Image 1 (cartoon, one colour):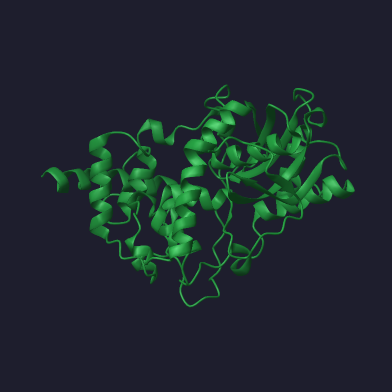
Image 2: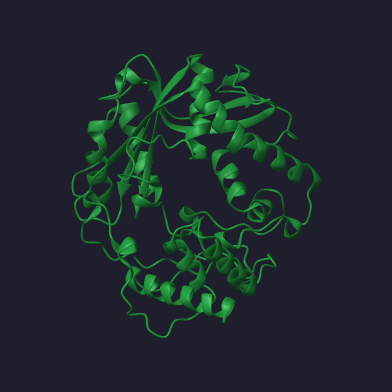
Length: 362
């Protein structure tokens, strides 16, 4: 049912308004926590304001602005600014100006579902330095304080096919080009380092690999989201994932502690953490500890984190800059952010894991 065929792929598609429009972020969120996706995309719940509506444009948004100006007009941001130095670090991996398409909204229909895609850059692989020739190519800019969480630098020979965005964007490129392979380059920019750098993560995927991943990761979730969107059930009736409550270092916007409508309790989170530890797979210790910290206050934040948490790959070992103080959102309520520096957070989390184990098994 999900074989990638040339259904439709243009820049100006028009569909009935009641046809649900899927995106990579929507699919990824629903895969992570269906209840959270229900509140965000299929309910009238108050939504979290965009960062640029409260704190000004983020470094990631400024970087995307810079790459758009570069590809369309050939201009480069000034040296000595965060975005300028960061962008210049990525220049050796970019296509020349006025090649391919940049920041263009594209739409595609696959197996009856409509998907909207906003590509940072899309064109021919011959324009990208070091890429194989004669393939459709996609490029995406990624800013992160900790790129290692995405596998950057850990498994360079393993294609990131588990990434929903990689699968969906690759599917579009295959449909649009009518070829059997696609080349991709995800450029990661560590944000908390003194000397700015860009780390490329290149991959080449076949049509068979993309179809398999699409059928496993995107098509079933699209079906489920379409059903939820049409029936509009109470999101609290949808399956939650307590381990996702503290993603991105802050509590979910819809959580009770943020004044939201989700009825998931702290005890639910504790029980989920205990099950995750008992099972021994799933999320890494860093995320488990952060999730546990939401419900348990540690007495001694000075405990040293284990080596597998505090060790960074060589290319990321730089002195970190202190994070700027966040501005208050202009909304009736605000999300609760994780407090303290990284070492303190991890220390509290490790103790929280131990407390959770004791509570579960005495």
